[in-house]
Length: 235
Ligand code: ADP
Ligand code: NI
Image (cartoon, rainbow, N blue to C red; front, side):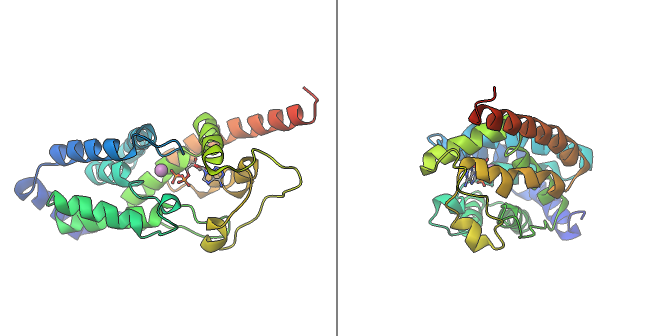
């Protein structure tokens, strides 16, 4: 899964001819921070900052290209399909427009946009393979954000934003077999645990991602046990 040699060569050329990497990252972080500062559906700036941090931790262990990982992490949610009328091309297109406005070289832009295009979870029955090691690191980091204490908080924040019930014992979880079904989901936040969150630990790409996911998964299982015990009036 190592990066395409053309991409590596492009990245080297970029350090010589284009705006330097540190400046690209600073400008991009400022841009994304402004874009996402008002979000209350789980995609605020601090989500991006956490994904950036954990993606870099994973990338160091994997020896992935840190610049590409950081850039993709920063741009991965600039135009999520959930907030762009279901258009899954909106994210990569917005990232491309931004990178072109900075004159970032073509291989870097293509690599980052491909990572963003492949990143999203698309339903329990839909595979979402990543074509590069950098993409694998960013996907794992983004998925870790849907797990553990933060993942639980984000699920209920998203549910509130969407106006869906927290839990309804008469509505069973749906095993979405296609991205279309997943997009049209009208479930509850508790069902989302069974439709996505509890499936993620077995879909991580990297060793570090798997390790971190396991601990966050166990915490969510404890949380659900407690939730259902309280729901039943047992605790
Ligand atoms: P990501 O930032 O990983 O791309 P998403 O864009 O899929 O995550 O969603 C943002 C957050 O909202 C995630 O933590 C996700 O698990 C949660 N979420 C997405 N869909 C639902 C849903 N139908 N019900 C509850 N939470 C959801
Ligand atoms: Ni995200």
